Amino acid sequence: MSIDAQTARKIARLAHIKIPPDELTAVAEDLSKIVEWVGQLDEVKADGVEPLANVNDKSLGWREQDVVTDGGKAKAILANAPSRTADYFTVPKVVE
Amino acid sequence: MTKLTDLTVTEALSGLDQKEFSSLELTQSHVAAAEKGQTETNAFITTTFDQAIEAAKASDARRSAGDAAAIDGIPIAMKDLYCTKGVRTTAASKILENFVPPYESTVSQNLLDAGCITLGKANLDEFAMGSANVTSAYGSVTSPWSGPEPSKAARKLIPGGSSGGSAAAVAGRFAMAATGTDTGGSIRYPSSVTGIVGLKPTYGRCSRYGIIAYASSLDQAGPMARSVDDVALMLREMAGYDPKDSTSMEIDVPDYTTALGKSIKDLKIGVPREYRLEGLPKETESFWDRGAEMLRNAGAEIIDISLPHTKYALPTYYIIAPAEASSNLARYDGVRFGYRCAGETLDEMYENTRGIGFGAEVRRRILMGTYVLSAGYYDAYYLKAQKVRRLIRQDFDEAFKKCDVILTPTATGTAFRIGEQEDDPIQMYLNDVFTITLNLAGLPGISVPIGLCADGLPLGLQMIGRPFDETTLLSVASALEKETAFDGRPPFVI
Image (tube, rainbow over all chains, first blue to last red; front, side):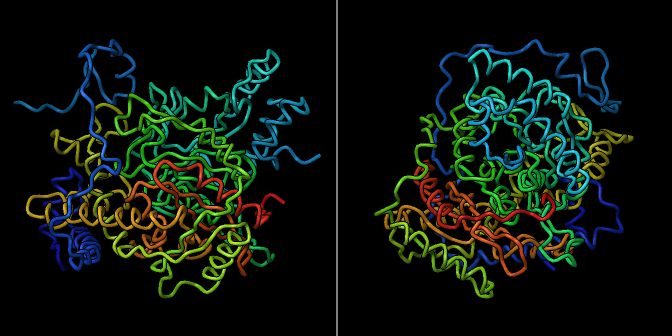
């Protein structure tokens, strides 16, 4: 198994996804199978090949003018907030 | 007279112009069909019938005043991945169960501007991750197809995914057309298994602005309908440069309808030998050969081509797509919108929210993506996959020096039962083996029904075009459609 329960726990932490401790082994097995399956790319010789991120090789243009074109929509933006106070999103206390 | 729900978009537009019926009548008949269809298929997550009726009245008023837009008054289904202003948009996820976008996606706005009427938000796999429409938090979609024999009428088949609700609504005759999105085959696979036409445009042809992201370098919007003419019409309205999407291309959108019925004489159609997979059902192979024969009859030359890196497309995709998904879906944290599950600390709140808010397949892909991007593994997996991705694109570049369009099956076979393949993710991923290569290479592709298999279910063939040459692609698709004269109807609507 290429991924053990401890690694699965670490990945889940990085991804901010809670996984109950008794499910970690199953998750690790599941991920291992996929990781081993994608491992077949090892057969491909690709040294010196330029990685492809954007198929159209489009380079982004420079912004012509740096001006504000949008804004003043606090109400619309906050309308979907699960929790808010005045014009702020609220979260559990971060600093003691 | 033909039932209004049996018309194609092209036929309906002519009927509206000739005042044979109004958009209100057209929309009402589709609403009535959709109410029944919804019970049978669960094709919609949210229906907007009342707004549709009002919009139909407004469309009729525009037409009376001589102000009708290009596809004015046509009732369609909108995949619930497109943000629609004031209408709940869920991506089929619990994490967005109460999300009402304050803005409209560019493509859905383009369709509104063209006069389209939205019947509702079509069901899909959660965040478009799936090929059977079984991962939706709002229930699976059932295909309107079940096979011809009465003994099989109770079979519940998948409509394909991820755009399964869109496919079911169009095949079931309760939407004239639909929007889909395609990251690895999510328009073409459902089109193949439900006997409709679906087109994935070239990457950059349609704006992604306001379409909930899955894997941004692969995602592309496209139309689904019951004829090649209709998808050409829809694409013309959906496509175009958008300053709000930096990957949309600033090039002209041709009038695709001029490509229809054009002679394909002297065009070269490539048939890639690597797609003759071991274990490919004989029936699929013989339909593929028959399709090539039909195009030859229509005047095209069929040639053998090679796409040597084909077998590496699936594993390449299942590194790149989850990697991009893990990054895109980081935004769902329960702070600014969507579902929140309380926690003692901020981190605990994030973890609870995402642990409960995401379904199993989405969780699997986020974890997979997090792993391949994590320190120490990035080069071995993500960078390697990007290199192989270029080799796959180069295969196509080489092939297109010899041919104009490529012909392949869309899928290995017909629809399977709901519940099958669910235990083995890799088995499920294999459904996209013929479609996924195009997303990696950014190419346009279309699935057109070729016929009914022995099990009474439809199968599609896929045609692949050069980048931004949807026009030639549509000419060939239109020629094949004419040759097949496919008239299969799901038993549900008969």
